[in-house]
Image (cartoon, rainbow, N blue to C red):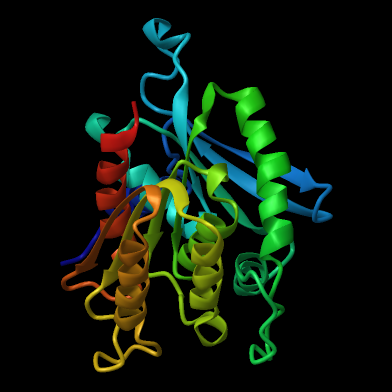
Length: 286
């Protein structure tokens, strides 16, 4: 088949038009509804962090003008915030202000999170700085809480901390050192193995000096997070040991739920665990 010059021109224009439309589509950015990004320059840490915020669907409705909301705080924000935004998209789950804390500006994400989410120094981590969690928690308490509660209708008595992996063990550490900072905890695939199971010594110290642990805690680990399934650590074993400890203490004020989630590994447990954790949390939020 031969094309005339006019036909060739028309065909070229059509192809170019399609290409331009495709390029226009590629340049359109997807935005999470009712979300924003704020940069906090931390005086505590002398570093900057982006804070991601998503508001509930009814936040700006006239009928809700005096309503305050629980706040879901998330570490590892670039990953966890997007998951939480999806989980809370539909109205039955959309009951909280979602706050994701990103990594420090100008730093590799893994470097930032390992430093900020580990409570004590572990010199076996040759490539990373560890032990920055106390300062990072001070940043959350003094600067993140303050910003969120001054600028949004956030209920300071209904703070929820959710974390995955090192974020989960960070949450366990907060639970055993500053439990009053949050009323609810969602701990998924917590890295309880950090520094030779150091968290279990901390729990023993807490139990020796306390019989009260006022918090609602949901904990989940994937059934595939074992050495037999190719994992680098026996996360399931650590989970069972920690949950048995908490149950045996009979702490006053502790409402505790836990599970091993069938079919999930270290990288797929968080979406399921967060969903189930929020369902647990919502039962205990008035």
